[in-house]
Amino acid sequence: MSVGQVLSESSQQTPNYVLRILGHLEADPAKTAVYSWDGDLTAAEFHRLITDAAVSLAGAGVGPTDTVAVLTEPNSPAMLAARYAAHLLGAAVIHIRSMNARSDEDELPAAEQARLLQTTGARVVLADEPNSPRGQVLCNGRAGTVLLILDHAATTSGGTDLPTAAPFVPENPAVVDLTSGTTGSPKLVRRSFGVRGRLVDLSFGSLPPEHRPTLLLVTPISHATATMADAALAAGGSIVLHNGFDVHDVLHALAEHRVTDTYLAVPHLYQLIDSPGIDRASFPFLRQVLYSGTAAAPSRTAKASQVFGDTLVQLYGSTEAGGMCTLIPLDHYEPELLPSVGRPFPWVEMEIWRPDSQEPVGRGATGEICVRSPTLMDGYLGEGDRAALTAAGDWLRTGDLGHWDKYGYLHLVGRIGDVVKVHGIKVHPAAVQEVLLNHPDVANAVVYGTRGAEFIERLEAAVELRGSARFSDDELRSHIAAELTAAHVPDAFHRWAEIPLTPSGKPDYAHLRGQKEAQ
Image (cartoon, rainbow, N blue to C red; front, side, top):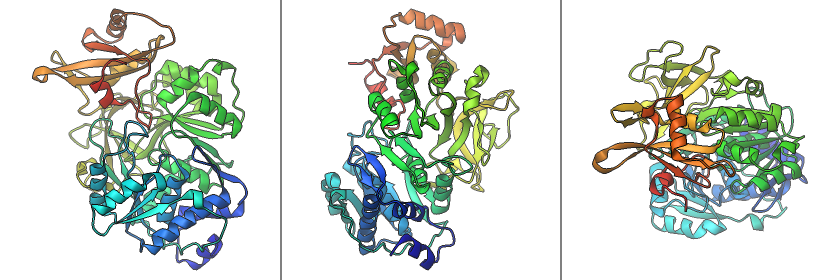
């Protein structure tokens, strides 16, 4: 059965985004749909991989309101095929291999994976060949849980019929995401099909892209860039999957695959603009370079704007809310705007409240950033903090602190609770980090709190210098004291050749606190 037949014969009122993807794959079967470190796939081959997965899941009785645990190699075609197959049948997915892990090779422990199965009620584990042994262990330890193997090497151009798509029910669960866990234990975020569909539709802005995207992805497609991959394929485009970030691989892919769009974590952007010869490079096919994840230094984003021109876009968002604010290309030419994260998207309402109430603060005053948006999560699952959503469920308290400037642009200050009390004075690490990042010889920096003997709090900094720069800790102390106060100066500076990152491109705080000096 073709996608056209599915659309006409199913009872869907709002088409599932997966049907749009399959329709484009059917329309141009010979084109390369997925460029991957794990093997490129034509549209026909990728369609077949999705079909195989859907047939296996349907055979196991998977349907609406079920949850499928996806256990595949990171950023592989199999990961996408598993998600699309489950969503085609109306089932929810949770990716359990390496979410929030320190590196893509660092798998979540079996006990944590088993906990995720228990919490979500998943009764099917869909794994690829490399992860099938772990999948079997998980299923052996949980009665009634079935292991299914997805092998894209065995995909052929033959024709098993596509299972009938489940009716589209916007309220049904679609995904359970893990937060990044930057400031604590990750939470399980629930999203319905209706919200997930809106995230896909808005991944390229208020309107669908005018071009057929070729999207390069270097961060986990199980997490922040998941809906970007979905949106690119739903628009008839292609995706380029890298298993991690490498400067030379990215520059090669931008040219070889004529990449039009890419998403980079802020430290990845820094590495690119520090690459030798980048000032002479040309990117004629690029339409958008989206960067996000952590605070960006104005001096660095100004340099990035010189390199990437009118393609550079900053995003401020979260797992719970989706995209909230953006700094558009023209904003990058205004130095006064670079310390901000931009203005809210047209579909986002944003207010800044007093942390202990729903009372808005005055313009310029700092408070908790709160949002109302059609892309908000449906809530947390399990042990998560259910108080993040207001009683009516329409506003989200982000936990981020910020203020508006005179132009109506949002500036981030830190997070509620992410305050270090040093010698009786409360210090926001984010404020100190911003000053360090503005030093011309600092390539990257992370400031964080620690607690030592007798629970005394300390402020510490991890610093990555630019090129052959050499200067003393006293010079760094003087730089911070001059911009802020002596109370803001960290108790210790730790030099790193390269600050360790999680797969999503955020600083690995656990690693920084556990191993303070680069080896």
